[in-house]
Image 1 (tube, one colour):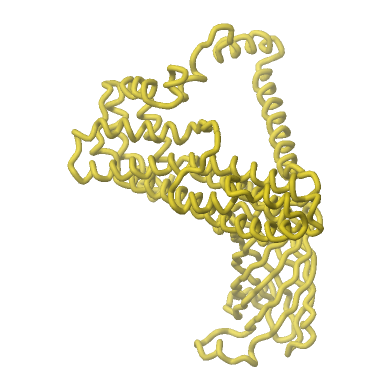
Image 2 (cartoon, rainbow, N blue to C red):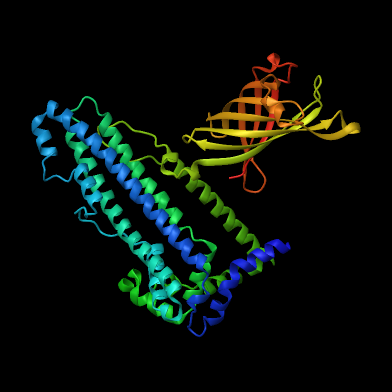
Length: 478
């Protein structure tokens, strides 16, 4: 391990070392918990709360607008049904939006969903609040701000859960009553789609929240090693109030009639031991292979699952990218291309870094910056030189499972850059219009890659002419 990595690990985990030392005594010093933990936790909570609040508001605005369009159409098609659907006593999308903007609750019977991450996070913060007599006023204020953010998070989650049910019920009501009276159902289709994207987007936001950082995992492990915290968890968490035990310890308890991990391991060793010294290892490999195949099947099923069909409306294939954040839709990569000596140009290697954006599950577009390194006239005259740079753009369309149609437009400066004035001479830049195929392959480690074979439509127009065939190896960095 390099000294730099060692110093980083020491910096990351040293503030928690004293916490482990105090776990046996049941004490914890809040002053020794790094400020970064509280700041990161507060930022993480605030980002999640803002995301679900913003998404909920945008969704309700869209739904209310389309609902108004449907109301106008229904009043012309069937005034009686319209009067029933848009009675002031009905919980419409407009009423939901008004209540949400005013901070009022939407009154819908809804059973609150249990969330382990939020429950444990709130309980941890409450427990830390009981220890604030050990810290100065600054630290006490920081803990109070984190608790305030966590309570706001809990409130916003409850509102979004209630609205999800209310939106779904109103959507079904509109579809069941209006679909037979309207020739044009595009607004009903939009409502159906938006309801699906709203639910799936909130699921994605939740997965980002519950993805614990290293600091969170370490502090959680430390706290659960303290008897006083375990008791506090049992007495104050939602799970503990229902079952009398903390969620973290429920699985670990020896429930009557269930075999323990140790007893199962012992039985496996007794039965497999007669098959040779490597029997257990081989059995583990078989289990791992089965688990991998099960995960692969799960991923395939996830990709083909469709939204529930609403009677009277055509099916739609969701764009899963719409449920992701902007950062999640970005893709980073680099590619390398070798070129033989041609005309006045030496053998060279072009290395490009790209950043793309997934428009949908099938389309992605992006930009790139490339640099060209000259390799000389051959192996006997190998010489590295800077031979230019390029600006790239591309559009990928997923034609089949691992096959893509790729197009691109590029500007390449095939000259040694001696000063910045060279970059401003348009006559020195060659244009490339590319079209070809890309095949997805497995890259190094778990990274994905592509092999591209492209044809340059402008190659013969360049002066001097360039090679029209370009073969590139691409590696995804994210």
